[in-house]
Length: 366
Image (tube, rainbow, N blue to C red; front, side):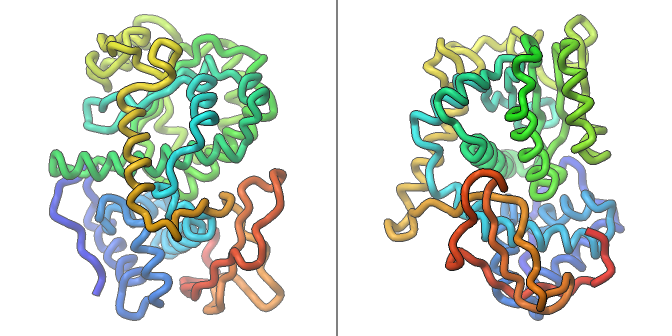
């Protein structure tokens, strides 16, 4: 018997067609004929105890195509398990020294909600300090892991908002302040990091972006955008607003974000006592980021000692199928996932996930 979603309302409810397809997906992943191992993985991927809404995001990412949505969700739940993402909330944040460097080199914070009730995340991307990251030996794996911790924590914020208001808002608004961005920051490491994050987000956290505002865009940004934009799918690109500094930019931001939740530096009225973003004035933290850190620490303390072990390195790329395996068949799918292909060795043979593969279709495009 498949799980049922608790009664609540949605920011963007499904159409009647989408609801039919979601019910089919629920039978596929949570039905009585679903292999127990697959059902367990699917249950661990459910956000805010709402399987309907979780599956709907994958369905929308594949334009309502049932088979393609099933293949996408199946790939996601296997990646989550084999990469250790299912356990990432229980492991604690990065070690304090690395966390401090990332916060100093990449000023950011969750910062209230927008007018639709979406969690708001603000980052001063124009101040990203790649030299500091390199000097302090912050690897690509470190930054991607921290990004995944943010992505998993936003799911926590979705659930908290649902419990508080009775409305499940499972999308987020992001503001990137590009003021100060120059060619010195547009190095291969920056592109490599952005590419890794974009790939993960689009494949495994689809339809969680509500809106993204790239503000104070300088001329250097447009050179970077020519490289970055082809990585993004059409649905993501439609949600991105690139704005130049000035009154029109302020009007656009305030149309979506209440002044009380928008920093003064961006035309809002918020003046957090210790600063809106992680910065030297607040010892590189904010109340929202302290709340996140306390959540991770509490979850880690609640874990049995034997199971509180670091997850395997993270990746988005499964190893090639063996000669005896073909896509879409009912054979065991063994997946081993290193984080980034050029960073370190792959996990040992023991670190392998083997679960029955669901036979959706051999002809469906990935």
